Length: 283
Image 1 (cartoon, rainbow, N blue to C red):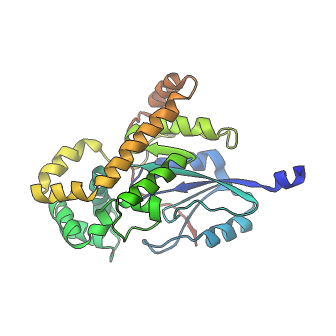
Image 2 (cartoon, rainbow, N blue to C red; image 1 turned 30 degrees about the vertical axis):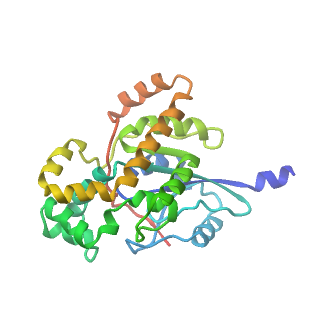
């Protein structure tokens, strides 16, 4: 029995939803696990890493303890010999879409519809183009990713129920606008398995949240109202996630003191991040 228990591997999976604070999370993982951490993405921006590909990779790398990917899809894998812990941060959906524009202006991906629009249009035109031509890319994406592991089917209320259930079960949950509370709560609850998380990394690739009002004014009023409507499920999901993060944070001994220390060490409270241009493991 002891031999069987020793053979079980604990692996932390970072579900890196695009534009959801992933760069700093990746830095934390890299400084916590060093050579036992990896990024794992396919070359296709819209690709996915299957559970079979992930398991094959982990079996080829028996010391790997943490893996981050933009292309992991829920549900969390279940496989003999492994116990997986999921790490996922959510973000206000409209702020997330605003940040997408900044990212694609700086780092275009030719052929990707949102990127092409960002290169061709002002931010108001970018939003109008997405809402009118590619609404699935800006419609309750986070709800879809949690509930269904996809982004191309319009979610409905039952998807929000399923997404909420998965969100509440997340091992390490965060929301970008209460970033440090999520880090401290997450570290507290997974510390028995992963005791060396190095939370005090400086913010990386930060985009400013203070531009939201400028963003709203740059959009046609009807278009902006439609964008908000298209993300009503995501907005509710993120509200529920904030409440869950704060519930978990309230259970951390000396949580407020640890929060002050982390705020002072990093200068971050609520932050946004872009995808880093660093080497990655290919699927």
